[in-house]
Image (cartoon, rainbow, N blue to C red; front, side):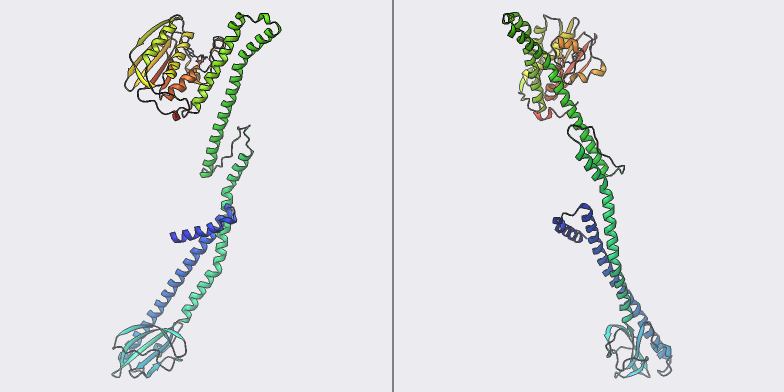
Length: 475
Ligand code: ADP
């Protein structure tokens, strides 16, 4: 059957240059397969029919010969029942041939010469198969030995092949006539069925063609069939949703960045315009209090954005140093000491990672804690099996449970007025998240025991992973 399949495939391959549509190709393939099946089925049917008719005829001939032999055991040839020598629709010739080849009795119209010359013992029977008579007719002949007047004779009963061949020919002709109709029906049915199956595909294609990059809110129609095409449509819709989400995030980022840059740039422009009109106003105070802080703010924002962009591309270029986390925390303690009260529980902890990036993580968390703390910031680090756990807690207002995963997103500020005024860009925690993830660690936020927020960073102690995993996780 695999030969047939590869044959069909070869025919379809050969027709490929015609660039027929899926419908036509499927209809053609169905027609070719149907033709092959009908041809094989027709051939098998004809052979089986022929063989079974032949065997029925031979059995009838054998029986007649046996009955004649039985009659000759008690009767003379002359007394032989005439029905035993009669021909019918099946039996065409009966001959009783003597030992010398003389025909001693025969059916009406039988050839004058014996159909076959065989010598059989009394009671011995044999199928002689296909035999051609002197009149050019073809028979299947059954022979049986018998004795008449102590002389051995051979009873020959011949079955006409013509009726059998006629039946087989008729069946063949019917098949040959009916097959094209059947093949045409199968091809037309396949053409229609494939057309119906492809209609949703066309609907999906039309919709996809009409979706522009500017409006990604549209979705492709999902057929209610629950089949592979419905699955394809669902997958495409999921992809469109991701694209829409990505584009919305992109637009939001552009908006946020413009928004963040606008106010320092406006301050700088206003100061410079003022100074252009009245150069005597461009004094040290204006530079120190307005121009430098605003341009530093812009610089920081751009640096942060570049770091996040590099992280998105998986190109943070992290080093693999032995980093003493306790040393990084100790450095923060001395920095914060002037602003707030700092409580510590710092144990020796070492991880493999990028010193600068990890110290940035701790600085961002510590800065936030100091900014929101009422009086106290608590810094701890401790080794745990397989990882190092760092916590940065404060006794400030804390972060509401519903906002805890949102605060790690870019440009999210829960208290915009306050943080903008104090220089926050809303990128600090996003950077913490990216750097920690690039070290295969986790960062979470919860409630500190004394009220306020506590950020917990867990860093694995093994080698930092490669960069490719950085942007894999999406929040
Ligand atoms: P920002 O530059 O505004 O500090 P971050 O990404 O560091 O940006 O923080 C995002 C927001 O999370 C902050 O605007 C603030 O609302 C909230 N937040 C961060 N740390 C704390 C904290 N320790 N206590 C309360 N709120 C915090």
